[in-house]
Amino acid sequence: MNFKLTSSPHQHVRRNTGDVMKLVILGLVPGVLMQTWFFGWGTLIQVIIAILTATVTEAAILEMRKRDFELALKDYSATVTAILLAISIPPFAPWWIIVIGTVFAIGIVKQLYGGLGFNVFNPAMAAYVMLLVSFPVHMTQWLPPMNLAQYSHNFLDAVYAIFTTFSVDGFSLAQLRTDIDGVTMATPLDTVKTGLIQGYTYSEGLDHTIFNSVINDVGVASSWISLSYLAGGLFLLKQKVINWHIPISMIAGLFFCALFMSLVDSDLYPTATFHLLNGSIIIGAFFIATDPVSASTTNKGRLIYGAAIGFWVYVIRTWGGYPDAIAFAVVIMNMAVPLIDYYTRPRTYGHSAAQTKKGAK
Image 1 (tube, rainbow, N blue to C red):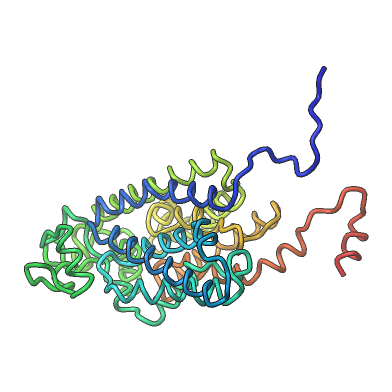
Image 2 (tube, one colour):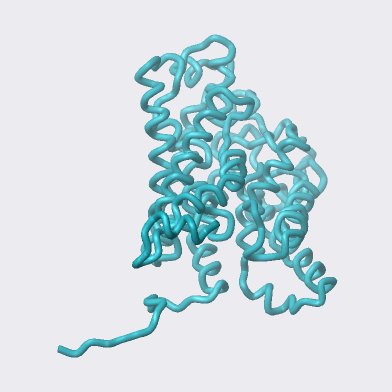
């Protein structure tokens, strides 16, 4: 028998950062296209603005730091950050929202800490939290799906709305947010949370016309978008860009929390399926929590990290002030990564656990 001997590391898939980021961008394509299909051209316009802002911001800062910005831009990490932030905000949010958020993500969260590989927090999620806290009204103005909108809008309407807050025909954002019954649109998570706060049961919160007569149709759109991002996430798993530990543990953490509480009181707590197919849990599990810089680096640590994010998502969704909680949960667990990695670091071959801990000190 012939054996091929190689020196460590024994990894035969050789990819640089740019190759990895391009695969992540490719994995995001199905979800972005589905989001655009349901909610209009605003999503793509926000993505374009974010990418341009991220590129200019990173180039300017690297130039001031006397670094080779052309080489840095080729790693596409700023592009991935821009896309993740752009698809997280309402499609018709004013242009300055995405510009401020992207500058904060690249300039403060990433470059202020030393650039790629040194940032403590996930740049896109830290920027999202900043925007949501600073501009809560603009960050919650989601549109109804295209087929349910009272006033239709095309690409030019989207451009006008983002840059002037009015469509070509003069409809305001408030008008564009109304569905065919004239009810202002809200996300399924927000609708159910509002209903529960006002004393309705989970099922009544979905069906009651006071909140949204077409909320079930909106839930269908949200489900298709989630499944599209799931397809992209599975693509990344197959390409070995990410491993399964964080996505599976994060989804499982949310699923079992929701399952347990719904069994305790199904009138008060939504089902596990509702939590998984609404909001951004799928994109969070496969594209956000798996950030190689700000996430845990050990396999055992990744399981703990992912499960804890799922737990915090459920806690904040259920008892917190925000209907969705991916960004807050990720930022919270980013702070815990050094501690998780310290206690889950694998033992060096040939050394006892006591020797490993003594060496770490």
